[in-house]
Image (tube, rainbow, N blue to C red; front, side, top):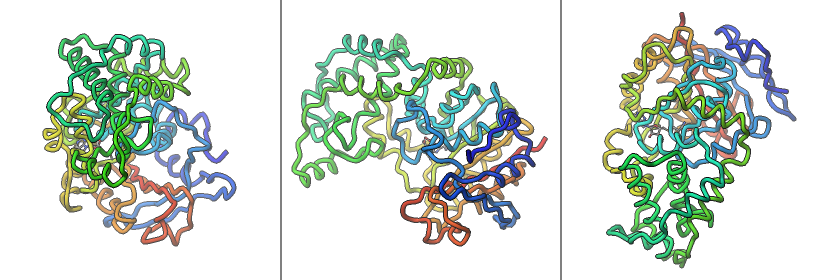
Length: 422
Ligand SMILES: C[S@@+](CC[C@H](N)C(=O)[O-])C[C@H]1O[C@@H](n2cnc3c(N)ncnc32)[C@H](O)[C@@H]1O
């Protein structure tokens, strides 16, 4: 077993043990590579770097409840690694850039308390309902009551949907928005809204739309018209209720009774916030034991453009979303935002608490964001314990600094590990 798990790990490791733990991990078979450790300067600070394949999807199966598409999401194994080694049951785990909620859902499954924040209100719409998974029968019953004959409305969606599919979508949308306005929506309605939001567009027959980009990247009406022309396609009828039930079954397929109880319990005390991560006054000082997060990266992800259809379905203004989401054009602009995020993280982190900050591979590894993040974390008051490079398809040291060897077929996470000393 390459992930060593001892009782002391489940109780939360002290800092020196975390370093020893990272150094002692053995990669998965067949290579079973030991962790490479080296000290390297990061923005003027000497920091130990640990390189290995620290987890694999195969050896650490994630729950099906995570399987929601979201741009630039990380795998559940990433937060799970840190939840296991530095927190214990009842601790609070936070993600200031929560996205589809990978960190908080994994933390909820592990019996931790959770706080999720994201400037995009769609994040809560996607995350919260999965803390209250309904039965398949309840979803089936509810769908029977929802009218399938909505009016087309002013927005032309004919390039995405067959006219009958569009009637079903607008019927569902009106039903959900009305219930929300009246405050009569319940966990089943919110679950259906979450699933439908994820089924709106995609590139297979499991989605409501004709073939388009993957579900987290909605193209404009004009681009879709061009795609249809190029592919000589017209939208065919899709049975939206059947697809919602199919996706519900898929999301629930590995969920156990104890998993549901753990999620429900976490939700009782959970905080779901829609704020700029730099300013989260709803979170009390020194209450978070672990933050696991990945920030918005430079300007490569267009959250507003990608989400316009999802916003329409949920009655949200996509133009307002664009104003609160950080989309920095230069690394200096990005670092200025992250600087303030770190001051806020320092305020909310409990003494002895941790931050695992994932920066991914940017511009094919030529831009090492840890060079910026390490000094920012330190100037906010944290000490930097490690830069951890999790490389699937592990390659040796000559490759890790990333210029061209980590390109194809690899999936690398670069994680800055910080601690608020007591
Ligand atoms: C890389 S994604 C996080 C993905 C997440 N780790 C997951 O697994 O789904 C970054 C997120 O940051 C959010 N975001 C961008 N600017 C923000 C800001 N200033 N404050 C809070 N959230 C922000 C975006 O809406 C996006 O959901």
